Image (tube, rainbow, N blue to C red; front, top):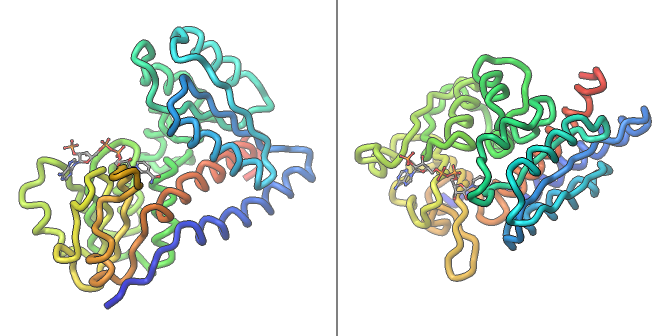
Length: 283
Ligand code: NAP
């Protein structure tokens, strides 16, 4: 078997075209969705990630801004900036790029963002709303993974292994998969004999950041493979899955780059559109 490529770039492009139409309709009603990203310091990877979010927002007709603060900024100044954005009616979505310098508490900052502008879905209120089935911003990477999986058929009845239990990927995607009636096993660094267990699963989602963790020989014939991992090896971005060997066994597989990554940015835009609609009392 040679797997079909789950091409995140293509799927994201089509999804963003739909979002652009929605933005157009909002603009006709005098509403321009705005995404504002706050970045602290000059880390090259973070800066380029922020710029790409910014460009993506503008490409679908949203307005967007970057607030760039010095690496040695005081925590109080960053919190004041967030407060100002919370109170600015022209701003619908606020993102603070992480990691933050050590003088700043990431937890405090993420909690300072007003939940109705928290388009990353990391605020404790929004996490609670997700787990209690209320309307909320679903974290972008898990939401993007679910969108990719729509292209592989129904999840109901499937056995899914999620490797990695972080609050931003593993745990929320396990929740979304459970809601979609899949049966989920959440694996992590303490899971005994993890790699040998993978053969039992119809879907494997790896969100670890360990290149070569999963190879074709670990997978069930026809498995669906979603590789969330991002690591840099020899200056190249690679995932957790050995793509060539896995492709020979899987039915669907995401590449790295060009799989989950473009979907994550797309879901930031999706959530910003929702924020603008909800702010204006629209569904
Ligand atoms: P994280 O917070 O570091 O979590 C990593 C998880 O992997 C932890 O739960 C850890 O287990 C588990 N783990 C580590 N080594 C393992 C092993 N050998 N076997 C099984 N599980 C193992 O990372 P994250 O923020 O979730 O990100 C995970 C990866 O996804 C990273 O490479 C990140 O760059 C990437 N990522 C990509 C996107 C995208 O848009 N493409 C978005 C977000 C993240 P313990 O809990 O036991 O420590």
